[in-house]
View 1 (cartoon, helix red, strand yellow):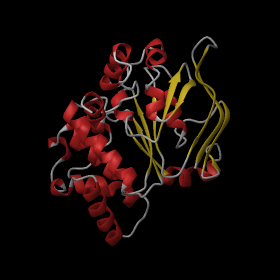
View 2 (view 1 turned 60 degrees about the vertical axis):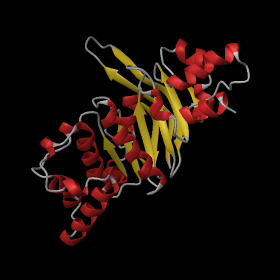
View 3 (view 1 turned 45 degrees about the vertical axis):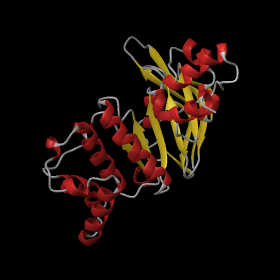
Length: 274
């Protein structure tokens, strides 16, 4: 697992000033879990994400990946092999002239034999549903397709954990859905541990656990149904809830028989049409 112990991260500014981005935060991420971390801009969620594979190091506290301390330079290579990162802009992660060459880049840098690289590339593209585009130039793909190729490039290196830092922020609704479906498949069918950072509430509906951050601290944590039922608390934090959950919350005021914790359209249909 990934264990975060009393993590504090401070960014140093000029004139001896500091900004505390993450404050005394503790969290455990279990093997095989799908965890979503929510929060608006400036809540510290992206800073936290960069600590999970040692892109940032703690000012105070510790981050342990399968028992390895991210502050230990001797463990850095192993940690980054086990924790893959996908960022907001897929164009910043695609470097080759064809999709299959791009996916092969990571395994090549790990020194994997060519025949195994071919196998890993084919498997990774199949998992994300991009096999038919393997000879296509990445710049000709849609945003959602580019992000799926970026994910394939990471999973071809066979990490245990996949950390996605707002991977759908620059995509249209159809591209977002493509990426979310891919993430769910990787978790449920491939058993990959997913840490998904986002500010889109509806992307958290199918997570095992939701963590809400504010001012560098965890303010809410639990299963999606538990967290999203606290509509007024989330609103006070400046966050939305999935539209169907907000509808259920409003309906419940007039129709108490409608549960407040409905999260999908299917559940709403059942509640309204028993």
